[in-house]
Length: 221
Image (cartoon, rainbow, N blue to C red; front, side, top):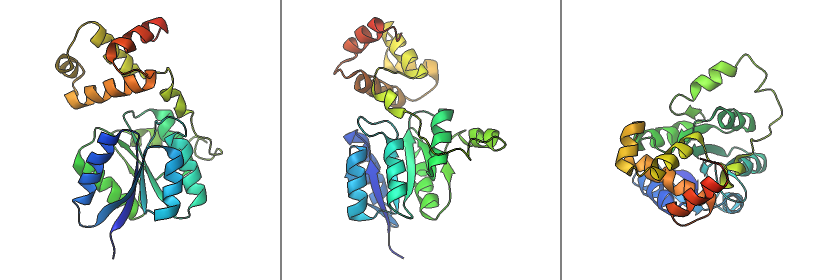
């Protein structure tokens, strides 16, 4: 049996390279291609025929959900795992409706990442953290029988910050350090740093001071 072929799709190069190194250290899988947006992902999927696509849910242009719809429709048997910082219920349910096989939070451990890839490559599902409770809570509803219509995740690439991002930005405005914020929220410093990067990306600025100005002007914090 050959190695599982993986396509990584994420607009953050540092994150992409880190995941690539993790995967290529394993004997049963390797990264065959990388893309930094949904449109390129569809093209590369046609060129490389990956077994599993690791897809960032929030990207400028074609979002992860939108690209996943196209991939699943166009390439029979392709398996998609969505990557996100958030376990938002509407994203999870939308992902299931369109046929995504997994949903991993970006701050999961390396062990969880590899476990998810293997399970999905073998034809199983994998949802990290407490995401499974969204699925169980909705099994008796009609949400899974509705037509697949992805949530408008592209809002995250405009002036829409998550509740946690607003909390982080407010804490930064108050003069708290990454260490202080991580301790207050009981998460890793790496997670706070990722929130900062995403806030700057969404508000399309290169420094956190500009983020605060825009967020105040737009009433986001």
